[in-house]
Image (tube, rainbow, N blue to C red; front, side, top):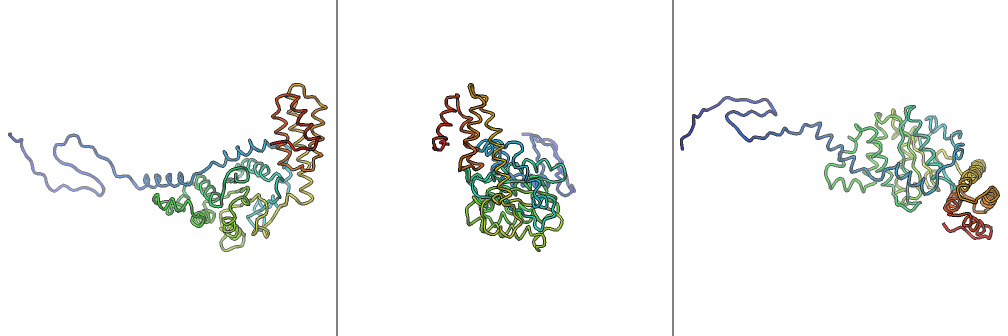
Length: 344
């Protein structure tokens, strides 16, 4: 077979990272080498996706569905509390505030209200991250879950700060270990809080006491040291302020504290319960045959119960509202008057 003319080519040079070809070619496909910025963005996205777990807004909405919608006017007194105002403004002696209360005192409903209100404050230069522990409401939760969620929210708020997490998510094996390690997640969390570029962030954590005890015992001392204003571990320029809403937790008693079960606040919660009952029972008028007398009888009976707690009342009212007829409403009222507890 005859060959065509042939030409020798020499002395061809290329710039660094470029490609040069000489001669006649067909069916050649070139792919540029991935640049460093694209590679970084891909790794950052993979890191954020690995840290993502339950969406805190979805968890909050689930709790609202379970506990009932807060009645306007309830829990609003917290905004006038001196300790809360000092925490929110950064004038407190600590950037950690503890709101404590016993079982069924409305802690989660209060925490929901606070996150909703604080989200409205973001226009004033604050950002909000939050965590609701579902373990006290049929779900699961751990100290690792708390840190994982907060880290994910912070690097989502400040994408450039993902640099603090990337070294711990280099491949599938290190990612698996990091997601299960409280210590690793704490190092990332601490670096984020100490980074001046984090800015002003308010954080609400509900139900830390419901997490597994060993994790809480490790996490709480770390938090108190980090968020003490004059601690050597404290960030200088960023302002990360944490609000914990929970029952008893050892290690928090030295922090600024709002007690829901002290005399003054217990009285305010009692007024909240009255307002809640009066407001929610009005919804019974939507059931055919329900009149003022029946609604009034239900209100009186609910208020006179010895087990009047926010949680119990929420469930009782929800049970009444689930009635399909006035006859069923009257039967449930008779059950209460007879001394039996409504089945939830």
